Amino acid sequence: MNPVIKISDKFGTFCADGSEAVEFLKKAILPRIESGEKLTLSLEDVRNVSSSFANAFFANLSATYGNDLNTKVVIVNCRDHLKPIISSAFSLGLKRREEHLSHVG
Image 1 (cartoon, rainbow, N blue to C red):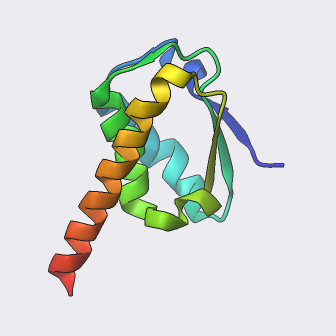
Image 2 (cartoon, rainbow, N blue to C red):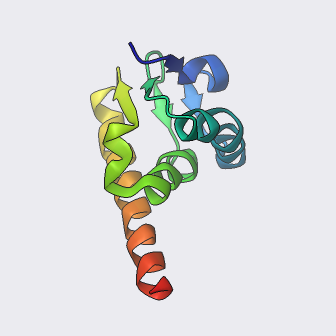
């Protein structure tokens, strides 16, 4: 079973601070993924997510791993009204990744 990280344990019911999201991603999430763990991110108890937080956390995740992200991370317990915000952030991350890769080579 994948380790479960409950986002509300770190950020509460309203995830708003993009700089805290980036710091958490760099220190707590990316190292675990890089070590080969497949993580489950639970949005249980999260009632709202700012676009700043979503772009800092979810867009950076998708920019880092692209389409391979679904083999590394599972998101569960996401409220329906948060799905468009998170989906948009994932799309933004994929767009950034594609732009970066097109400039690299």
